[in-house]
Image 1 (spheres, rainbow, N blue to C red):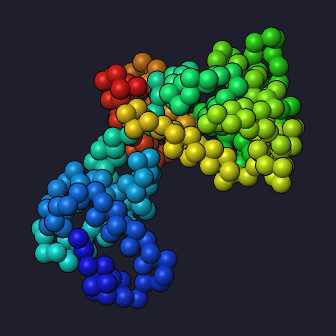
Image 2 (cartoon, rainbow, N blue to C red):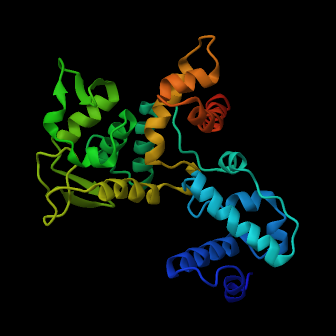
Image 3 (cartoon, one colour):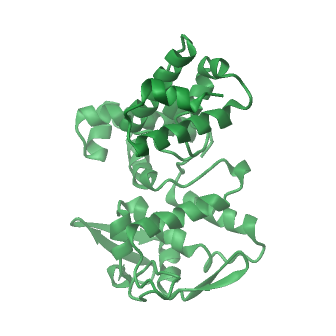
Length: 300
């Protein structure tokens, strides 16, 4: 659709190899979503331009990422002689069709089970997909991938017979109900089934999220994120839902804001719950409003 060499020579002749490869991936992605349309047709279609910002269905649209893709598109408009309208970051975020939020942590765990049942009639919710459940529960509470990789079974302090208490940054979190059951089972897990095969956990048994490799005693933060990516790859397209780690804790905080029925302004609520400045609250506002739309439209 776009002559890559000509485009690169005109706008990015001095760019380093990494930048040139990034531009090539972007142009290949644009060609894929074009579906046979001409470059001019694509650049005049705002819906397709929104899709251009997502290399993956669960991709992030941070401000730096938005500005980078906007720059590529502006140069493409000039290259093709099209007087197009680049969508705003808010429009791009609102356009994402894949849902990455949940009505509750219980709904998130239920979603994981629904994917498991879809993949295999032999799916066992107390044993299979427990690692992804553990990552999601801790991520929901605000633990980082590094903190999850370091998390030990002894960090789960038993409170009575049906509750765990965990400590993070001086704050105590109580875990009960379905999240408690999931963490209880994963703490004693030795093996599980995946695609009909029995997978044995071989990493250091003191850690909650253990490795399946005998050469890896402890997972690193990249491997924690990889657990989510592998799960997302199993989700049937018709479910139109995925798990995005960076949204897990935000999801929990958005629910807290949603439950606040006080007369405080939305910005004040966001500032208080998210623990951020009013300027950052403005950045969160559109994301929160999109979340509310998902809640109230019944999409989550």
